[in-house]
Length: 381
View 1 (cartoon, rainbow, N blue to C red):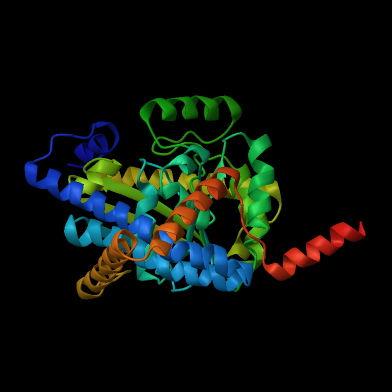
View 2 (cartoon, rainbow, N blue to C red):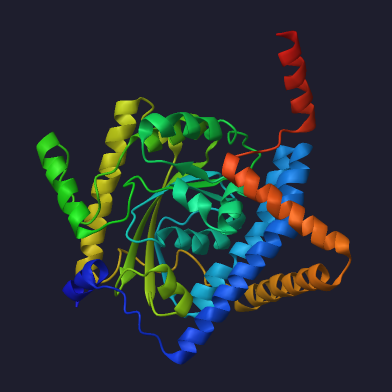
């Protein structure tokens, strides 16, 4: 059984044959998720993430977190309550409403979605920010959301990414601002071919040879921890395992896979991590050695140690009410745009034009007071 789990999680390709019911349900889910995302961006995202930011970055982030938390809560509701995915937590119980840096293994293209299941339980689902491939910023609608939520796009070339990462991180130090910053130190999702290259590199350069994860890249983690350490409550070391195979995005939408997601969490106080670069790098590699052993046990036994009891189930009633509220809001705004005053159409057109430009050129409004101060400094110089 354990071998079957291990083999299935790594090697089995997704079955793209769906029943008609799953196909119809999947299409409906995609339409709901896309339409609600567009509505939240135009009627909530722009006023809170752009207009309110002209007066206060802090209150802009908090308000934006509230509205997008309502929308992002649709995803765990889809996973757990509609598709019937079982999410099993183990390891440390984490307190609510902390400012944290999350690191995780990267098994598949949708690992990052399952952070929402944990964050929703902690009241932080609207506070998650990711370090992600810059190409994802070009996605229609969702790229706008990534920009508003201040995700950090990278080119995977450190000489280019370092300046951008540190610049954005420097704006996220305020301990009053909610923050769950997530990154995948492996830099890419796991495949057998990539693992073989990683093992070869590790053996040739004196690093530990890992079988279930890739050797982590340390520079991004070092930058994040160094820039944010003083304002963080904890670092969450998250390890994710799947039964019976790694899911794709469409697997999630159509409810084909995963049947179970297992999430193991270690909560580390930042002061327990070294402060110099070599020490941080060594700590991260040791953390991935631990992940490697943990996943080896998961693939042989089908579970992480001491599973269950660390997190409660999601409330069906509460999440259903939230889902209905988001859908009703979307229907109302769509109706007003199509059949209401011409000013709704003008507003929607202008917002779409602004978001396209802002995302393309990475434009973020400065608070008016700060903008005036900057203008005077320029004039004096």
